Structure formats: C-alpha cells, structure tokens
Length: 95
Image 1 (cartoon, rainbow, N blue to C red):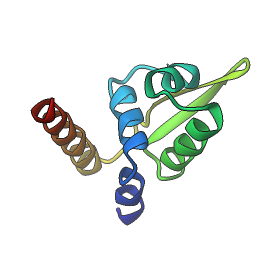
Image 2: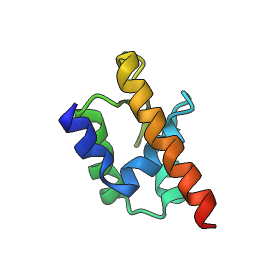
Image 3: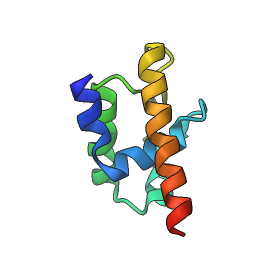
C-alpha cells in the first residue's frame, strides 16, 4: 500500500489516473496532450503507475495504450476513487 500512496503523491500521476479511471483505454499521446506533458515525462509517470499495479498497458504500433488494471483489489479501488474524488472536489472549490 505504501508504494501506491507514494505513486499518488505526484499531481501528474493523479491527473493521468483520473483520465484512465473511466475504464477505457487511453493512448499516451492523449495523456500527453491533456496534461501538457512531454513524451518522456509522461512515460516516466506511467511507468510508476504500472509498476505499482494501478494501470496496465499494451503496445499499439508506435504508441502505448493504458487502462485501469482490472485486477486491483476492491479496497485499493476505493482508496484510489476517494483520492480522485477528493481532488476533483478541491479543484472545483478552488475555481
């Protein structure tokens, strides 16, 4: 659990997870565009999320597509969803 919480400490990784959490696949190019991140930066962040088991990836020609790991334990899913929802509420209150 500590590794997952460490992965969530970064705002770019949380933002990427918020996009991916919809259960669809998302190309790294989409994540780069939506988060205004370079390819190398996005790849580093997604590697962290993949290594802690939050996302899975698959190669599609020159791109990599990411999606939420379907095998995440339910209690971890609840933690991630709570963090993402809290951040969304915070952002709305700050706007």
